[in-house]
Amino acid sequence: MSSGKVTTFLFFVLALVASAILTLGTAQTAATSTQTIQHRNDAAAAAAFEAIIPVLHHPRCMNCHSSGDYPRQGDDGHRHTMQVRRGPGGTGAGVVGCSSCHQDHNLRGPHTPPGAPDWHLPPPAMPMIWEGLSDRQLCELFKDPGQNGGRDPQQIVKHMQTPLVLWGWHPGEGRTPVPMPQTEFLAKVQAWVSNGAACPAYLSLRP
Image (cartoon, rainbow, N blue to C red):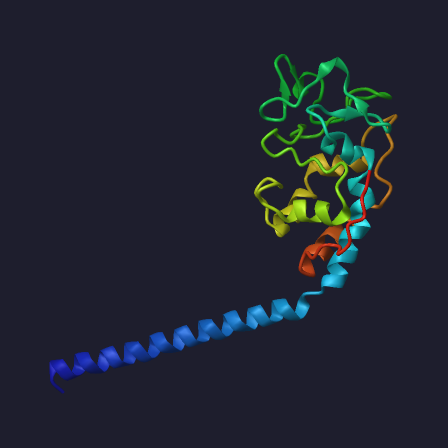
């Protein structure tokens, strides 16, 4: 066989291999897409999100996600003392930074400064305020990378597992912890994402 024919034959074989790889990749993509569609359950996703709404509106969450350029305190959500402000990065303004009082753990004793790693408010460019939003609006905020810190739904699941979020179940003496079991909350968040992250259809307003 001449060198020209060998080259042609090798080119033909390589073309067949490339075609087979492309076909296999397309089939796998289609199978994955079909599997995703088969597992999508809008009703289950919406129900899972609605189940976590009471947690999101609990004072341990709302004190950092309510309206205003400042954090709140207590179960009544009163304005933080000492004129604490959000600041350009969410860590306080001027000399009154969050780290001035808040450490990476709760201080001992009732009503002493609470703490967790990375203690801060959302920054002003993306404050994640959900006070007054309907269930659907809050869900859409959670899904929007332009409003949620650039996170996709699976990254929301990871965020909910961070020490700062989980602090709500261990807020220190004198504070009411989140009543829903932590494991149940995390399971509901995962169920919301696993079922397609659909949102409630209605616009029931929340405080």
